[in-house]
Length: 483
Image (cartoon, rainbow, N blue to C red; front, top):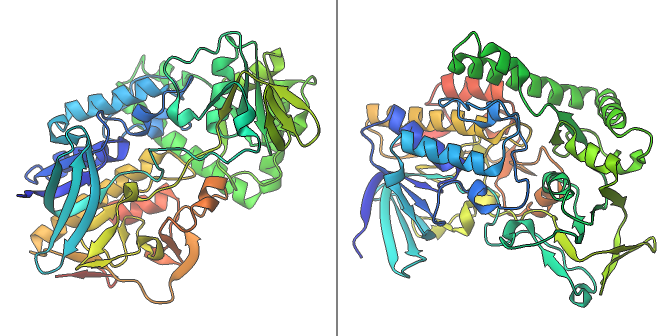
């Protein structure tokens, strides 16, 4: 099988992969590249998830690309609009024809002798195998498994006579009008589903083991709407973007420095929205703010839905499923026609593809990352991890800028290979996403690269310090070997 060759291969055509392709177009127009995408459409997450109300959980001024303004004033946008934004960006930068849809990558191997990656896989539509070679690869596959979400095995699950659904595989023809629905979970998906479905259901209940911090934010950016009357849209976008970056960072830093004060502030704001008719125990977590990601709701839609009586929140543990619903440890029974298991993600790195270097498997999950972009001991390869405490795309932007700077440095100095080498004492048992203690992060402890103790090996999750390092910091240092 003859291999097609490119300077750069990007794996994944979601928001990270399209961002990487656009940066290559902008910064390195003479580089050849292709994007391998397993799905049949652009968008990644925003093409996969189709459940009611699907939306961003970060504000769009920071979730949009830095180089292409988000032109709407909605603070949180719906999934189809985000997918269209990613598609429009790909078309504007002429990268759609670079995407090889339906391409499932099965093997990635680097040869030091040839200074080349060989990427093999199968076209899932035709069943034919393919092979590509590349000087450099960029993994933009996100961090979760697209084939299936995480769902515990519930006792008595087979006894339930209704439908059990996971949001990651939402049936297009699901009719929930007049039905009793129970949503298991308390994360971003659950708090989105409840208000989105409540108007049609007979009743909808969010069943949670423990509460999550839920924060109401304005549905529309009224300041930006006003400024657009006097200033160019691109200026207003950049101003709003920087304002929100600084605000996000300040809130996160305060939450870590003064958790008690921020906790009182968040719970007080929730209480004001809910009034006296709702028990605050369902909105009072047993952990500090930002130990897990906060859930944001536009104009308090979840609070208003619960307050109106269209939805309920129950905090309890599941004893077992029954024919007609769920029996709880407390003895309460939740009647249901449909149960939605919004129980989270299965974490998977690089779409499950194994990495080989010179014929030997490289356990990426046992390696630390360099500047949270390169992986120790893996030559000519970058991996894009977005932020856990801010918009994913903020990190995509500056990571892609760094990759372009690195490739320019290699071209200028006639280097064919770059590899990061970490000191032996720098690795910890924490992962690159260890800033959060969410369930899906804890479950993935053996599936993600490690966290370093300091310097370029430690993941800061701080956009401002990362910008200084990735956009403006030097390229060559003692940790990188060029050859």
